[in-house]
Image 1: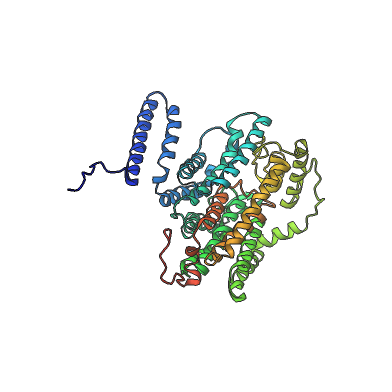
Image 2: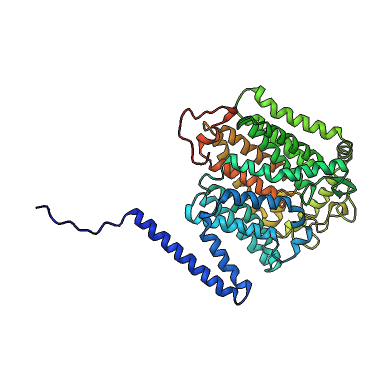
Length: 480
């Protein structure tokens, strides 16, 4: 007679998962109950509980449609959400709400999946320390924390991509960038045809839906590059050729030298870094040359070039003068910022202090430098975070470049890595004379591409290289 066996089953992993989900459900019900109780007292009381709820359900959020809708709204409403006066208000506007939404979802995902935890923690520590210094310099206020929250949302968006479980792959994020920007690009071309846009130093320039032509140019430059990558290395669809042309012409319509320089740097870097023969590389080089030729062929483009090349570094003095060109204006602004850095050379004045100072964000048409944003990201970080902060930032950029270079040497990742390095190169060039990260949509677009490149599996990124299926019967990656 066989021995009696116990009818009690051992606790399995499936049972643990059911119990864990039950605890999560009970916790969410508790949060909702507290939310209802808080709403009976005041709407403000419900805000912390709502944040907890978003963090708790982050792993169940449909990331692709949410990102597509929210990011498109952010791009199409940039001009109305990013007015210069918004830097000096403490109200929670839609752009701030979008930033906090990205932060909360990114926090919820990284707590559960823990991908990119070390670099994200290092970036957030850098932002927190810079904000603490700013509080010590200007005092605690919502205005003081604004720039830290803006840049934290860029980091959070990168974390969101890395922890998306493959849902936000390189193909998907590049398509989102295209769809979000096509309306703004078409509007910019319409403004060019009808002589509309914004008045910058007496010149009418297209800005699409963006706050400034320079910000529009940088976004269009990224969109041009990702569209070219999609055509050459991800399927050769005719729609991507059309989108490349639209975004390239939209970049020209802004008549932004910094945007044009960034786009040229992206295309040259992309052409030089992508694998293949020189004939294949020359396509990106030819597009860069064609865009520059079109820019110079336009009356406003040739006029701007003539004005800027006639400017001497000493054309405008550092005091009591009005610069007549954007280059002279920048020289004066940089001269003005250096004495501020000298007050605290090691740790700086604090993150965002050059942006939120009285009068910051006034239009370039004023030609004055007092209170205007720096138009040089390296100098801005030097003044705001000191030598230590700038060294930390450059170290982070160096580490990112090394990681991209390693991916470029990995079979199946060369095309994607070339795109990532091209976008990074364009941002580094643009940062020499513009406010790259102060244009939030530019920061978001760059973060999407770089995070997708650094987090995507090797086999998937090159699966459709040059329009051919290279998987050879291998299992399709989860994010394809």
